[in-house]
Length: 371
Image (cartoon, rainbow, N blue to C red):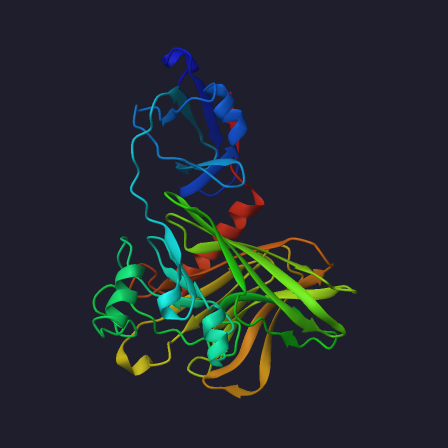
């Protein structure tokens, strides 16, 4: 550790990794008030032991986050130093997309995602879950893909060297959407979001709040769902917190992943470590689109299962679900996301290993302290 006396009037943040797994390029976070007060409310920089400035973000919910790599059992120190921080190039980004039926789309340097909005619902098209857009480049691609598709008639369903949209959602939970289960265990599908609020837009974290409903669940006809989705720079997974109001009785909530006929047995359920995954061969596998690896880490879920559909919906034949008991007004948090065989995630073994390490990291989080 570097001594806090290395810089006059400075304080230090220490980050310790108590787990048996090295943590590479993850976000450390700490209460922002503790750090801001150390800097007397003035602008500050974060400096590592080599003197290099570390980028950070003050989040909408009162955290200071910054990227770290910490080996198992290691402690690293970072100095809080008054002064204007250097500009940071943002690799996370998201926005409301009115020119494409009110999509809410977001991305980082690993992948891109979208949730469907009011205009699509009004069109009658049935698409319920999260969509996945593959990427094999770190820079932002969403705006150009939308512009090229609409203006230049260059389809984003074809890979032009940076990835594409080749994941099939339709009337399913898609790539990680959570839903309530009714009294007989059937999925109550959310439709498109009704309202949105972008909470923060980089440089290290994108967060958006989406509201859904009202929907009908058993005898309750005015159930409203709220989701807060956050995606960090460098992460393969989104953190999502869902809550429901208007329930008169306890239910079950279940994040899920659609299973397609192209690979009906390509899922993996790891109850012990609290994650599940699926290798999606895409809706046009013969075109050489690679494999999209989809995953959910849900340490609070009590049951992991495959649930077939009563009848196929397009290519969809079922879902894998990670359910738990739920009471009105509770917050339920889980993580979901994707990798691509042509974009840095070579195979299912690598994907499942990443999900396991991520789950283990949640169980033994970094210890971040202001000294």
